Length: 206
Length: 163
Image 1 (cartoon, rainbow over the protein chains, first blue to last red):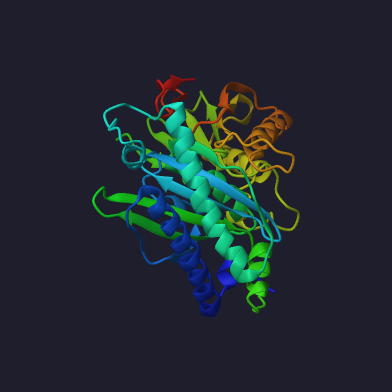
Image 2 (image 1 turned 90 degrees about the vertical axis):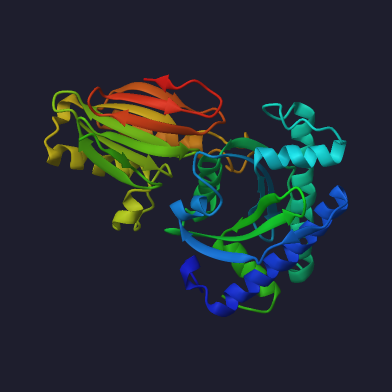
């Protein structure tokens, strides 16, 4: 039985990458339907990193991001985080509601809840496919939103999922959207017992 | 030459005037700044978790993570640098709940528990907390200026707070 993320071998990493691929693929399809355009996903990356590198992989630590979190519990525990820049959040809103407010400073209540709902749809699509692949029952929480420093948001999740280890594991994909140049991330964090359940659902023991 | 020394997540450093210690984007983590005004020696720890786990308090990388081991080690470093143990005071910042999640099973509660633990440990070591900016739901970057002992707190969309 593995006790730290660093003990995952190449085969396990490949499986996780495939999970990320399918999960994020479903999420991208949902986002595409919502925005009525083609959302591309990059190659999923399975990262096992020191704490500080987790943040560096998403952006500068003090950089403002909009982040929507969906938690899952049940036979596996973790979070799916959907992040985007404020500019991208506004661009998406412009596509959705048809008004261009890219000059206004932040997001009003209504737009915040719209972004939250997008995160919810993406997270549910992602987790739905994991559930389908593995046969695990997952309870998906309501979405939560934070608009703040990249480092402050991500480190809070690193604490939840990296505490047992000196490293943290996450599966990350970039989303991009043709013309508007959307650049966003979908990141999954989970703990080692949950990884074991996911692998077991796929017939692997770790 | 004034230097700025950056402390990463789960790390700690000491230095002296006129240098500045900085740690970026504290979320649920707590930044503890210890200062001896006599020698202008200061130390900063970026703490992730409230309490060390028995059996996992030996490795340095782990010791820096937890409030109890990190604070004791930081204090030791400062004294070895020449700080006067009896003059050391603390300023603390961080411990936010970034997503404002409140539920029964502890998720989102780590910031609050970090702050409680840091306060308990400092109190047990007779180190007075002379200023704090903790809790709520926003990130904080802290600059600890060792020439004056001031800690400046930067948050997005807010004025720089000095304490």
